[in-house]
Length: 163
Image (cartoon, rainbow, N blue to C red; front, top):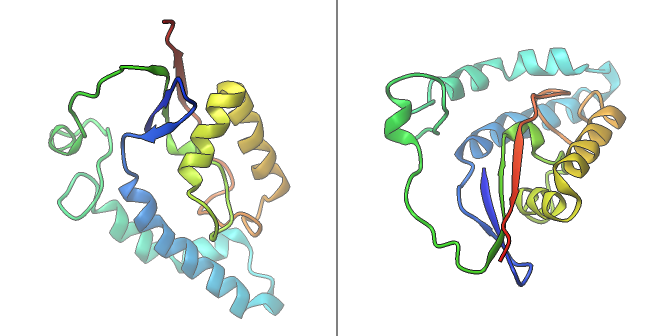
Protein backbone atom coordinates (compact mmCIF):
# COMPACT_ATOMS: atom_id res chain seq x y z
CA UNK A 1 0.00 0.00 0.00
CA UNK A 2 1.21 3.49 -0.82
CA UNK A 3 0.37 6.64 1.15
CA UNK A 4 1.39 10.29 1.06
CA UNK A 5 1.36 12.70 3.97
CA UNK A 6 1.10 16.38 3.15
CA UNK A 7 2.67 19.30 5.00
CA UNK A 8 -0.78 19.95 6.54
CA UNK A 9 -0.76 16.46 8.09
CA UNK A 10 -3.42 15.18 5.71
CA UNK A 11 -2.98 11.59 4.50
CA UNK A 12 -3.76 10.35 1.00
CA UNK A 13 -4.15 6.66 0.24
CA UNK A 14 -2.77 6.16 -3.28
CA UNK A 15 -3.41 2.44 -3.70
CA UNK A 16 -6.49 0.40 -2.84
CA UNK A 17 -6.36 -2.99 -1.10
CA UNK A 18 -8.44 -5.32 -3.27
CA UNK A 19 -7.11 -8.40 -1.46
CA UNK A 20 -8.40 -7.20 1.90
CA UNK A 21 -11.91 -7.11 0.45
CA UNK A 22 -11.58 -10.79 -0.48
CA UNK A 23 -9.90 -11.76 2.80
CA UNK A 24 -12.67 -10.06 4.78
CA UNK A 25 -15.13 -12.67 3.48
CA UNK A 26 -13.02 -15.46 5.02
CA UNK A 27 -12.33 -13.45 8.20
CA UNK A 28 -16.04 -12.80 8.75
CA UNK A 29 -16.85 -16.47 8.17
CA UNK A 30 -14.18 -17.45 10.72
CA UNK A 31 -15.67 -15.01 13.24
CA UNK A 32 -19.15 -16.41 12.64
CA UNK A 33 -17.96 -20.02 13.00
CA UNK A 34 -16.07 -19.11 16.16
CA UNK A 35 -19.23 -17.56 17.66
CA UNK A 36 -21.39 -20.54 16.62
CA UNK A 37 -18.97 -23.07 18.06
CA UNK A 38 -17.84 -21.07 21.11
CA UNK A 39 -18.48 -24.00 23.44
CA UNK A 40 -16.28 -26.26 21.30
CA UNK A 41 -13.26 -23.98 21.68
CA UNK A 42 -12.31 -23.71 18.00
CA UNK A 43 -8.65 -22.85 17.58
CA UNK A 44 -7.23 -20.71 14.78
CA UNK A 45 -5.95 -23.70 12.80
CA UNK A 46 -9.33 -25.46 12.70
CA UNK A 47 -11.10 -22.22 11.77
CA UNK A 48 -8.65 -21.64 8.90
CA UNK A 49 -9.36 -25.17 7.70
CA UNK A 50 -13.08 -24.28 7.53
CA UNK A 51 -12.43 -21.28 5.28
CA UNK A 52 -9.70 -22.93 3.20
CA UNK A 53 -11.96 -23.17 0.10
CA UNK A 54 -12.48 -19.38 0.23
CA UNK A 55 -8.73 -18.79 0.61
CA UNK A 56 -7.95 -21.10 -2.31
CA UNK A 57 -10.52 -19.30 -4.48
CA UNK A 58 -8.95 -15.98 -3.47
CA UNK A 59 -5.48 -17.23 -4.40
CA UNK A 60 -6.75 -18.07 -7.90
CA UNK A 61 -7.75 -14.41 -8.31
CA UNK A 62 -4.16 -13.14 -8.06
CA UNK A 63 -3.34 -10.93 -11.03
CA UNK A 64 -6.72 -11.47 -12.71
CA UNK A 65 -9.64 -9.26 -13.63
CA UNK A 66 -12.00 -9.27 -10.69
CA UNK A 67 -9.11 -10.20 -8.42
CA UNK A 68 -6.14 -8.34 -7.01
CA UNK A 69 -2.56 -7.52 -7.95
CA UNK A 70 0.43 -9.10 -6.30
CA UNK A 71 4.11 -8.87 -7.16
CA UNK A 72 4.74 -12.60 -7.50
CA UNK A 73 7.18 -12.83 -10.39
CA UNK A 74 4.51 -13.85 -12.91
CA UNK A 75 4.23 -12.09 -16.26
CA UNK A 76 0.59 -11.27 -15.41
CA UNK A 77 1.72 -9.22 -12.41
CA UNK A 78 2.89 -6.42 -14.69
CA UNK A 79 -0.61 -6.06 -16.15
CA UNK A 80 -2.23 -5.57 -12.75
CA UNK A 81 0.22 -3.28 -10.94
CA UNK A 82 -1.04 0.21 -10.31
CA UNK A 83 1.06 2.78 -12.09
CA UNK A 84 0.99 6.44 -12.86
CA UNK A 85 2.21 9.80 -11.67
CA UNK A 86 1.28 11.73 -8.57
CA UNK A 87 2.45 15.23 -7.82
CA UNK A 88 4.64 15.47 -4.74
CA UNK A 89 3.79 19.15 -4.32
CA UNK A 90 3.62 19.85 -0.56
CA UNK A 91 4.14 16.16 0.28
CA UNK A 92 6.26 15.71 3.40
CA UNK A 93 6.36 11.90 3.69
CA UNK A 94 5.85 8.82 1.52
CA UNK A 95 4.92 5.45 3.04
CA UNK A 96 5.05 2.04 1.36
CA UNK A 97 3.97 -0.96 3.47
CA UNK A 98 3.11 -4.61 2.95
CA UNK A 99 -0.03 -6.18 4.37
CA UNK A 100 2.07 -7.62 7.22
CA UNK A 101 2.16 -4.09 8.64
CA UNK A 102 -1.62 -3.72 8.35
CA UNK A 103 -2.67 -2.73 11.86
CA UNK A 104 -4.76 -5.58 13.34
CA UNK A 105 -8.20 -4.12 14.00
CA UNK A 106 -11.72 -5.01 14.96
CA UNK A 107 -14.03 -5.63 12.01
CA UNK A 108 -16.04 -2.49 12.66
CA UNK A 109 -14.64 1.00 12.96
CA UNK A 110 -12.80 3.56 10.93
CA UNK A 111 -10.64 2.82 7.91
CA UNK A 112 -7.84 0.59 9.24
CA UNK A 113 -5.39 1.34 6.42
CA UNK A 114 -5.58 5.06 7.20
CA UNK A 115 -5.03 4.32 10.91
CA UNK A 116 -2.02 2.20 9.88
CA UNK A 117 -0.57 5.02 7.78
CA UNK A 118 -1.29 7.62 10.46
CA UNK A 119 0.61 5.59 13.05
CA UNK A 120 3.57 5.10 10.71
CA UNK A 121 3.68 8.79 9.85
CA UNK A 122 3.54 9.85 13.51
CA UNK A 123 5.64 7.11 15.15
CA UNK A 124 7.80 5.90 12.25
CA UNK A 125 8.05 2.40 10.82
CA UNK A 126 9.43 1.04 14.10
CA UNK A 127 6.49 2.50 16.00
CA UNK A 128 4.08 0.80 13.59
CA UNK A 129 5.98 -2.51 13.82
CA UNK A 130 5.91 -2.32 17.63
CA UNK A 131 2.14 -1.74 17.71
CA UNK A 132 1.39 -4.45 15.12
CA UNK A 133 3.52 -6.96 17.07
CA UNK A 134 1.87 -5.94 20.35
CA UNK A 135 -1.59 -6.57 18.92
CA UNK A 136 -0.49 -9.88 17.41
CA UNK A 137 1.05 -11.03 20.70
CA UNK A 138 -1.98 -10.18 22.86
CA UNK A 139 -4.26 -11.96 20.38
CA UNK A 140 -2.56 -15.17 19.15
CA UNK A 141 -5.92 -16.81 18.33
CA UNK A 142 -7.09 -13.75 16.32
CA UNK A 143 -10.20 -13.25 18.47
CA UNK A 144 -9.82 -9.58 19.45
CA UNK A 145 -8.52 -8.51 16.04
CA UNK A 146 -10.03 -10.98 13.53
CA UNK A 147 -7.50 -11.93 10.86
CA UNK A 148 -6.38 -15.01 8.94
CA UNK A 149 -3.12 -15.70 10.74
CA UNK A 150 -1.32 -14.74 13.91
CA UNK A 151 1.77 -13.26 12.20
CA UNK A 152 2.72 -12.05 8.75
CA UNK A 153 5.98 -10.81 7.25
CA UNK A 154 6.45 -7.09 7.71
CA UNK A 155 7.96 -4.75 5.16
CA UNK A 156 7.81 -0.97 5.13
CA UNK A 157 9.60 2.08 3.81
CA UNK A 158 9.03 5.62 5.11
CA UNK A 159 10.61 8.46 3.17
CA UNK A 160 10.75 11.96 4.65
CA UNK A 161 11.11 14.74 2.10
CA UNK A 162 12.86 17.97 2.97
CA UNK A 163 11.61 21.27 1.60
